[in-house]
Length: 143
Image 1 (cartoon, rainbow, N blue to C red):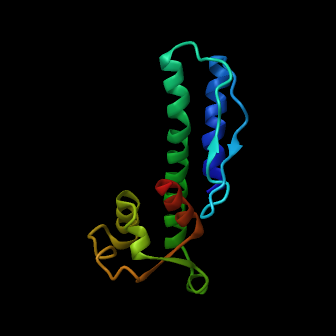
Image 2 (spheres, rainbow, N blue to C red; image 1 turned 90 degrees about the vertical axis):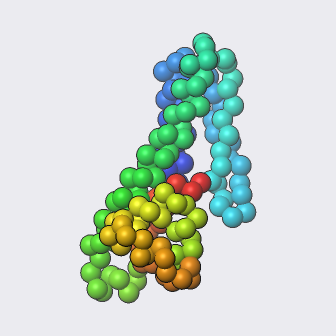
Image 3 (cartoon, rainbow, N blue to C red; image 1 turned 30 degrees about the horizontal axis):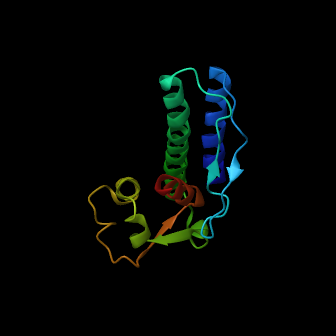
């Protein structure tokens, strides 16, 4: 999740640098549930125009989402490649956690369950084994 947040902040910085306006370094806004998962950048000098401001605002979340999807897809592929010995140590999340994100849950169902919804129709407490990268990608999509 930290890499996703870092890519988000670097994208904001890159646009500010490219467009020639200054921003403050990211200020950490800690949360009790997810420490260091919220940051704030302040704009020190005004952007040239509204499209520049839009680019600055849009690029961070867009890059964060793309990074999260990369983690999710990579993690799901690594989940499929787990050996029986590795499966006993694999992390698991309940189906109810997957259902918090319709998009994420359907991607997991499509890759691991064949896309017919059988995975998501199980009891919400049923554990689903996932590689930690997949869990990080899901969390990034949800945040």
